[in-house]
Picture 1 (cartoon, rainbow, N blue to C red):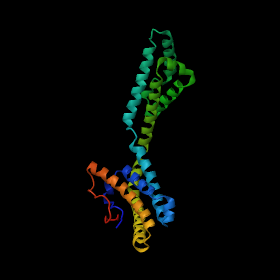
Picture 2: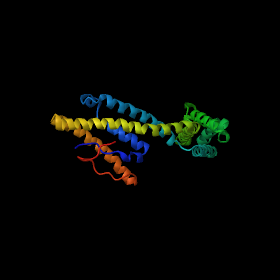
Picture 3: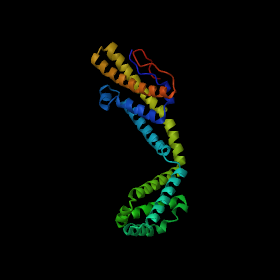
Picture 4: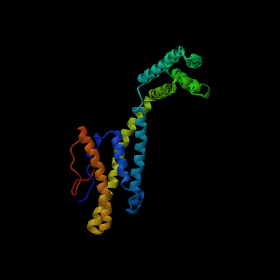
Length: 258
């Protein structure tokens, strides 16, 4: 009897693995197919709950992927210092054109020289303001002459990362809420998928044994096979990581998800 593979191992899945599994399961049944099989209402609940998981997942990722504040601060300060020293060194160049360009850049940087000693927010604001000024048309030729365009952009990007880290630090409460939301939404999505899975199994059984509609049975069987393949892919990932129970390859007679 064709059924959808058991899902008891799902608690071992990371948030990203969980979300991407259920996204792939949703994609196994198009909206048009759900309408045709008369399971649109249940399919829509699954689709809607998965959208909520997507929002929670993206929010949690935003914070998980943020560079720690101290690391971001250090990276920005190091680049600011290196850039400043580069300009000073080039100001001593025996090539007049280079020395003159460095002199103009050094003068433009003068108001920002204490940036690294300022509080985080002011430090970031000063570096972003300085890099924007030095990337303007007024200084573009001098920066090119000095060969510092890439270093300047690297400095700017480090300030942007620093700013993101500062924002994340300020929003740690939101990060905790996002993590809690993810924990809360996962079982809701699993339950919504179970309803879809139960209906698909029932439709397959009726088509096969009651209506003896071979075409419909084959169509639903293909959907179930695709779903089992997606689930099996995650099981294999978990097994490679050494977590979760070993689960046999899905086949006729395998147990349905609860």
